[in-house]
Image (tube, rainbow, N blue to C red; front, side, top):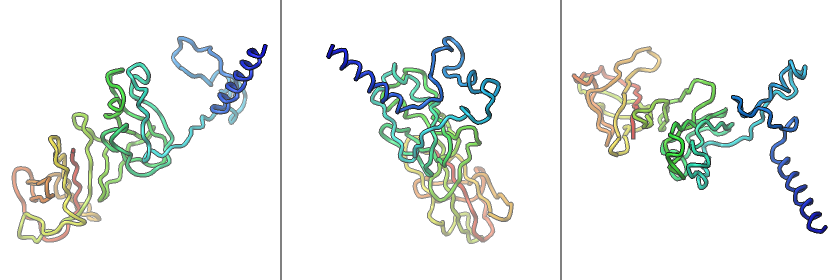
Length: 251
């Protein structure tokens, strides 16, 4: 009898703990087996079912800061979470770049407050542990994946052969007599050396004028950020002045 009572208490406490973690408007029942959705609230909470425009209509997500997010990958073994969290949705409150490295993607994503989903199109079960999330990235849900290019490194919405394209903005000044700029502000834009580092595109323009001078340059040294103005086939001397430019690159 004591064992039965003890077992009942454990079950009661476990039940209360379970219900304290996730609250529902009604008791969940397994009535959509072998159907398309894995969850259905429309049958009970559509206005046609409960005559209310407000009751049972929202899904309240817990908040998280994706700029400090770290994946828990110790149970990602090819059977548990076989898709590497592909399609997982979160509500983000942070602003800035996500972390990279151990238990995170190898490329940072620039985020702002709002809903994001983890895009990680890998073959199910093809990677385990931290490797299962290394190629993923966070994308805004249901909105244009805009990004703001500043003087700090920014993740764009472009990939090349699966590699993230980054962008930085700066200005350079030319004398009007040489194809090489005399100064760069805040500094020449360099790219970390690697076997895959490359310039994707350089756009030269003058803010406030509506003028785009080039979508490329004659040459670009990624090690020191020095460029030669012009096009890939010909160097061109720009009129003296200061020009805005955006460098897009892979690492």
